[in-house]
Amino acid sequence: MRETAYAKINLALHVRARREDGYHDLETLFAFVDAGDELSAIPADADRVATLGPFAGGIDDPFDNLVAQALSVLPRRGGLDVTLEKNLPVAAGLGGGSADAGAVFRMVESACGLPEDWLERAAKLGADVPSCVRSETAIGRGTGTALEPVDNDLAGTPVLLVNPREPLATGPVFKAWDGEDRGPLPSGSAREIAMAGRNDLDAAAQGLCPAIGQVLTELDAGDAWLSRMSGSGATCFALYDTNAARDHALRRITDERPDWWLLAGNLR
Image (cartoon, rainbow, N blue to C red; front, side):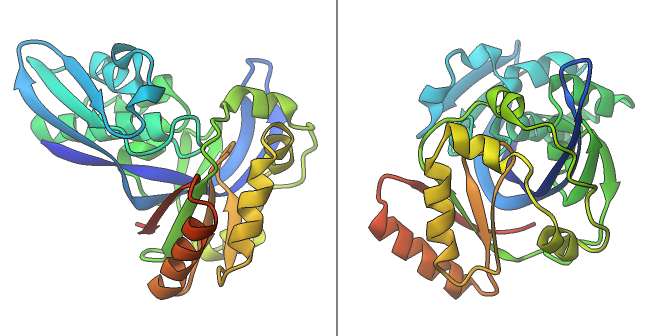
């Protein structure tokens, strides 16, 4: 079995309040790029996980990552020997671990089906995991696990992801948020919400990782019609009208900043 763990981006992220349980109430527009980590699996007598790829070193214990955790919460007969090719940077605002877990859910679904309470099982692994199971453009509310459909008029949109290769953990960014409720997510189609929305974690993230501002400056210098930080950073995205405009930006930024990580794709 093979599955792509599609890179997750937040086209908009509105943080509304801190909760007593340590989480945050938020409203976000999830979208997914048609590229990411790659997973393959074969039947085995017990679950095993092997990790390779350019960012495999970012996972200290491959048996304690979200792939192994996803396997542990899904009932089935026999085990799976999973190989994870880690192509997405770790702690990057792309939901990489959550996307990996979502890919495991889809592999198990293909092999033997998912339990009726799969959504609850996914939510226990992380707030982004339920959205990553389906990897479809959707609105997330609450901690991000309450999903709502949205008119996806952005399918196929060219997208460029850029990360300065500086890991940025989610917890410190949310802790640095100023606590101000700047209002709800706009209504409308995915494009309308993205255009009118914002990322309320941008200032907090840039305070911890100033390179994010440099990335956004580079993206704003091209022909993108929208550029923004994804999630809690440090990855930023830019959306374009054509693949040619995206690829031109890819070449320009690669030449100017060969130390950065870039990925070109299209929204699902």
